Image 1 (tube, rainbow, N blue to C red):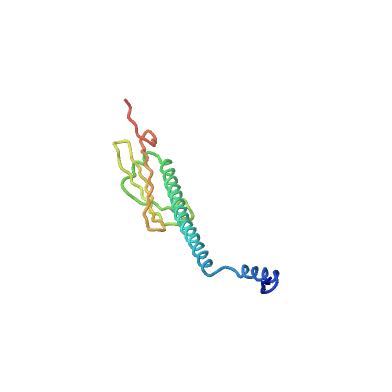
Image 2 (tube, helix red, strand yellow):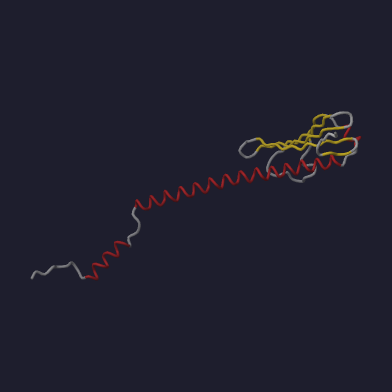
Length: 157
């Protein structure tokens, strides 16, 4: 009978295998892992940038609506003689009723035109440019008559 010679005992062979498994990741595994992590992070930062731009537009739009509502409230408090004297286009200061104007430079315009002898159309427009350079605007329109204020026009039959 031939005897098979082993290089070391069984325990030594198992130790040798376990140290081979404990060496760590190969270079290829590290590169693949790094590439996957880079793609995930790039997608996350891109989504974060989009969310910040959307948030800025929403905040700017909300402030523009507050500007318009504030100016419209002041016009609603005017007497007919004061409203009747308004005519043409003029700008109004957004800082008139707000101590600070956030985020953007707002351009505010009031356009008043006569709609017959006893009615005025009052149009308020706020315009601004967002962080990407895109122009935005919001406007309110109301009709003021000698007999009262109407937020809509109607006809009687």
